Length: 371
Image (tube, rainbow, N blue to C red; front, side, top):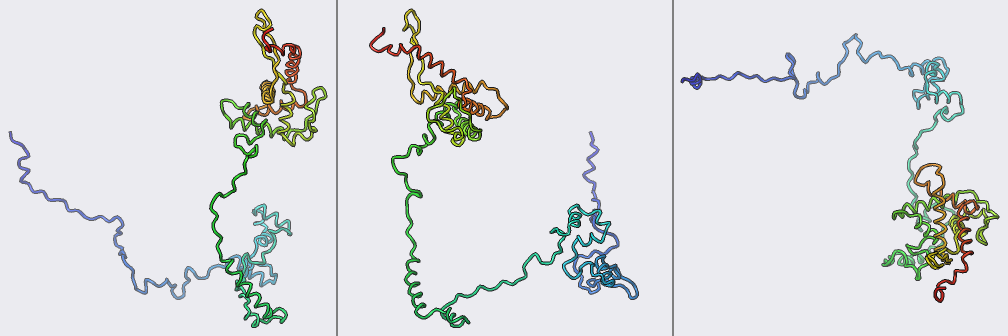
């Protein structure tokens, strides 16, 4: 089988001639690729004799024309061409059309001629005074050369005393004090004060109440709520004491409590704190009946029970809004209600004390065996 391409190997191909294409080339215009030193190319164009060039016979500026008109008429109120210029207020006074389209600030300055905007500038915003050289130090030789009053020139004895004093003090002033190595601040004296320990730096009542406010180990949130409670007690009006619900003996006047919010908090908690609690002893009364036994409480136990009652009463209060500080606000309101005798915590305290009074005969249970 014969192939039609066997004769292609013997053919000679001639390439098509290519021409360079210059997109920026303009036909018929000679392109300058270097500077021409010919004078006729460097010189500015000149108008022919008897003709008017583009920069000749130009109309004067409106300010120059107005200045010439005022000079001819002798009014003297034209624009200041030679000086600092004419203020805009002066131009608006004479041009009614421009006054209509002027900003409101300009219109107000025209109505009030005593305003600072209407004052004509008369001074430059910068100083044109040359800086004066600093006066040279007055040496003993300069005293004689200066034209001073003889009574102002020191005597030879005074000059000698001054020289001796300066020479004696020069070595002392040149001594560099030795660097003191050690602590930047002095060590505290031992034993430390009660409020200097990092774990006991707050008031004991504030510290205990903060721990009781804490939920899920969030101490920072409890501290923030404690700060809101104290701030609310600080800004609240003075409470009104109730004669039916007396507070602790020796409490300060009601007007002093907002000035001391920690004292306010302590007084409210200690006033409703129960003295004792009721412990139930199962089967002690016989027949499986529990026996109610009063048990005295310590100071921290009394405060803990009182604040738990206050938290329970505050959680039942209606919220007057939303936010992270709303519960702290309700606790502060409950504390104010405790001081004023309006809280239900007083009834819980009275009920515990009545039950303890009834069961006071059981105080000796367990001493010397069962009865």
